[in-house]
Length: 264
Image 1 (cartoon, one colour):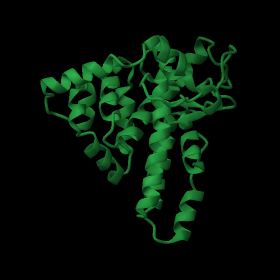
Image 2 (cartoon, rainbow, N blue to C red; image 1 turned 90 degrees about the vertical axis):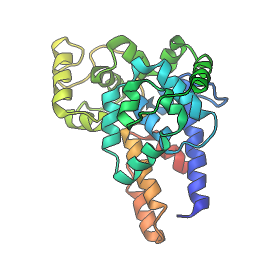
Image 3 (cartoon, rainbow, N blue to C red; image 1 turned 60 degrees about the vertical axis):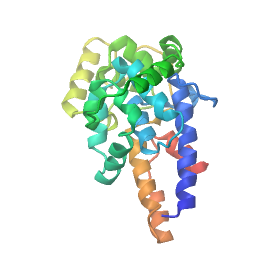
Image 4 (cartoon, rainbow, N blue to C red; image 1 turned 120 degrees about the horizontal axis):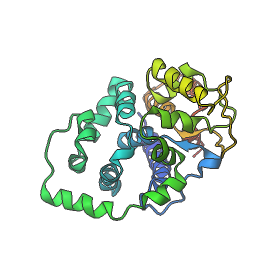
């Protein structure tokens, strides 16, 4: 891999990740993502993408602090499913990265997904507690993250995320595509869609009945992670033709993050 190219991708990815984390309340001095113009941030995809590119700066303590503070708003089943769906090489990178001491101070439900078993030392707990106090309030986070807002309304299960997706403009609520995007079983999505039709939340064409704020797509989603894996793999090709073909095969329909990453 060309280390200059890899480092450029890593640096650009970290800039974009920080913008998304500002929406979720982390105190970085960068502009947040405008979800109504750039797309919706998937919480679990953001977590895994962050760990994939994680270095050694303040984000190493701030992300565990966020996990501890907002643990009740994380869909742990989806986080586990996205991780398990990752190619082994990249899954191992994530698992190795999350072994950093600061993640030992995260809640047990989170640690179990990554096989973390160590107990945090007192000074580390104090550090994480201190960083939790620097995070923005849930009121502000709910205003800048539609997925968090809907989870506060409908809970942290897949129902809240399906309702979030109904706010994407011109997005057909196909059950199989939704299960792929949200990394859950077709039967789960089918049941939720039937419930939403029964209460007249969506019509028979799977369109939202009541007008509401709309979004252009996804800024970061499970598809973003797939693109990131393919980008990192492509950077290992010695052949420019193979690399070009790999980049041309990327699908950005649910990945404004990847589109901006390569524009940078």
